[in-house]
Length: 73
Image (cartoon, rainbow, N blue to C red):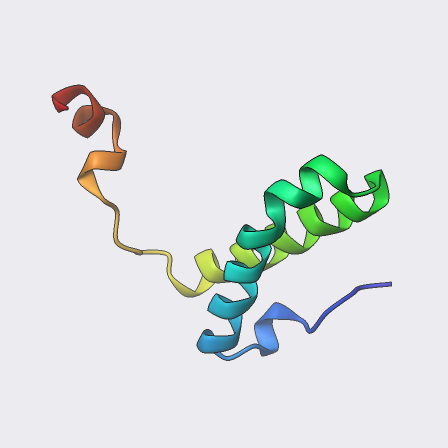
């Protein structure tokens, strides 16, 4: 059974909000949730991130987040 709305059906604003909420709750889920809850959180995060990447294959890449940028710091 899948939990949550299919990410393909979410408008961009809702997709971003859902991702933001998952990122806000990730550390607490890692520390305190049951294994099943953690696995579901991971599954949903992967599902939503995959949809984000599908919609934005040419997303902006921060040069400072690349190996060359890190070495220049």
